[in-house]
Every structure is written in structure tokens, then in C-alpha cells.
Length: 399
Image 1 (cartoon, rainbow, N blue to C red):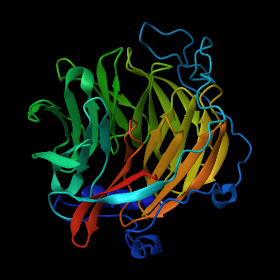
Image 2 (image 1 turned 90 degrees about the vertical axis):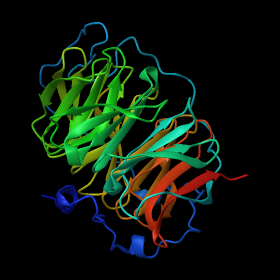
Image 3 (image 1 turned 120 degrees about the vertical axis):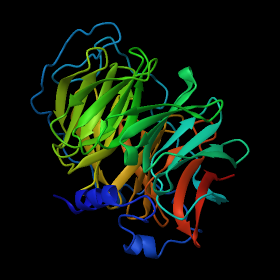
Image 4 (image 1 turned 90 degrees about the horizontal axis):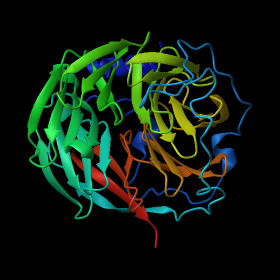
């Protein structure tokens, strides 16, 4: 068991009013200052040179032809044969660097935050204030907090589903997922029977929400129309984050105790493929470059970042991030990847062509969750304790 997993289990066991943070005693956290900025120079050696590709391991129940809206997974690919690469982003010039744009005071006690979800169309950011048991609703355009949604004990994952005007919040302390109406910001449903709900993904073709049950070793499936739990899909290990890939029409889950990415068919609600991620210990957080057919997978146990080619399911590049990486955010317009770590390090990367280049790092206390607004390219870091209060640190493109 890695130190990251031990501390994660300790975090789960702590009551909501207790501040629980991993890596708070590291030098990165102790020496952080508000003036820290992301370095604009491209220094590839800073994060390690790419290594040779790894191969996917044996798969389970791989399919070649999916039902309408189902998962198109094969033994060595999560990309349909008919897919063609988009020209945008190939050899793009580096975007401007980011600068601190200020700290916005957040309501509630100075304790742990977790996942965030951006609704770009509505101009909103939803922030899980985990140890306060509340969902913070932030207006991206005015830069102000709109409201808090209470009654969400140990809220971890959060996902906006604008098609239904709903926001899903994983209330791990109540072993349930709460459904919030984004117009009234009232809880309209609660779906229970999930041991430790964490990451969330929405599969539009199947109209279902998939929920990582981390300690339950499964993904739970919720009907987005009836708010009923349809089934629980056993994964054979601890469930990390969950994402939907609109190209393959698969739901992907990081199974952290098996060092795998698992593909689920959202129509049949079955595991259809398993892929090893060599060189990554304890994959929990990951992000998808859907149009570029890449998955960015981090390892809690060894501070590794692997770039997986979704056309071949091979690891084509390995880099290093801060200790105990947690949440990732991908900006498709700029080709920027952000990796937030429990050790208080936010690593920044630039995707140019088929290569991911390190841009530098920002250090801030408890900077383990990150979100990016794809319209403005602003980056958001909720920090649990800056001078005794929680703040939302905003990074904006430099003039």
C-alpha cells in the first residue's frame, strides 16, 4: 500500500469538521507564496525525458462493434477506425503564460476542497467544499460566489450536466449522490447505496451518470431521467476518477490498485476492456484530450504522468509531477494540461504536435484541485487555508 493510498483512506475516515489534508508538511506547501507564478519557459528536462512506449495488458470482453451509443473498444484501441485526426492544435505556438489575478474569499471554514466542474455555457464553476459539506457556486463572469448548497456531507465529486439543468454532487459522508437543479440550486433528488462516491461522468447517448465508488471497487450507474441507481459495476479494485469519451462512446475508469484504465460500455453497463498503464503506480486522476486521442494519467504512488495514445493504448511519454497528484484539468483551446498535487504543486504542460512539454510549476498550500475555463483560459485553485480563510486563487493570461 502506497503512502498516498494510506493517507487517502485516512482522509475518508475523518469527520467533516476535521481538516484533513495530504502532503501539508512538505517543503512545497510550507514555502508557498501568493506571488508564485507559472514559468513560461519550455524546459523539457525539468520533468524527465520521454521513454519508450508500454503495451496494454490482456483485456476482458473486448468488443469490435457496439450497439448505438455503446462503447467502441478493441484489444488495443479506444479509437474507431473511421476516426480522423483534426488539424487544429498540431504544432500550435505556445500560449501566453499565466499570472496571479487575485484571491477571491470563499465562504465557510478553512478546510478541504475537492473536485470542481465548469459549466462554460452558463458561466459557472461548481466547487466541492468537501469538509464543509457544501457546494460552492461561483459566477465565472462576475468573479463572485452566487450561493452555497448545504447538506452534502463530505462532498467529493461534482459534475454539471447542462442538458438536464442538473449538477451531480457525490456526498460521500452520506453514501449518496445528490442532484441539484442549476436554476433553483435546490437538491431535487438523492441516490443512495454507494459506499464512497467520488468521480462522476455523464454518457449522453445512454443518458446515464457513472459514479466512481472508490472504496467499493465499483462504478455505480444512475439513470439521469429517473434518478434511480440502475446497477453497480464491479471493477476488481479501487475506483479512481471516471470520464466519458465521446469519440469511443466509452466510460473510462482508473482502477488504482490494478494500475489500469478500464472501459465500460454505457449501454450494456459492462466492463468491455482493461488496459495497463505501465510506469504509473496508483492511477487515480486522469484527463482526456478527446480530439487528440490522448489520455493523461497520473500515479499517486510515484508522482508520474503518463501520456496514453488512445489509438494504440500504449504509453508514449512519461513525465514527472508533484508528489501525490490528484486532480487534472485540460484546456483544449490552448493545449494546456494542469496537474494539481497534494504536495502543493500545480504542474503545467503544453501539448504541441504529439509531444507534451513541461512549462513549469506553481506552488501553493493544499493546491490539489484545479479547474480551467475554456472560454477565458483562466485557471482556478481553491485553497483551504490562506491566512486562516479559504480562497479561490485565480490565474489569468498575462497581457
